[in-house]
Image 1 (cartoon, rainbow, N blue to C red):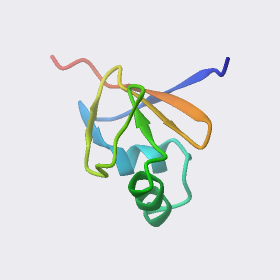
Image 2: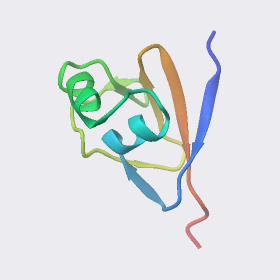
Image 3: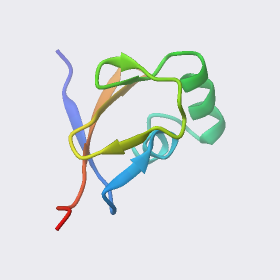
Amino acid sequence: MSNVEEITIRDSMIRLGQLLKLANLVEDGVEAAELIKNGLVKVNGEIDERRGRQLHNGDTVTANGHTVKVVAPDAG
């Protein structure tokens, strides 16, 4: 069973393509777009092909055999 790495973001939301880069799951936006377009990225366990998908606190993303969890600041 693989470990889930927590990725802390500055705001309450981050887009899928941005998270893949922030978490070092891809080298750049081009690689992120290719992975997403080819159905190789899962959000909360389901394939998501929307690069602009909004991710919030607690969402998980799996790509290239690694899973990360979004940790956002309190929305207060």
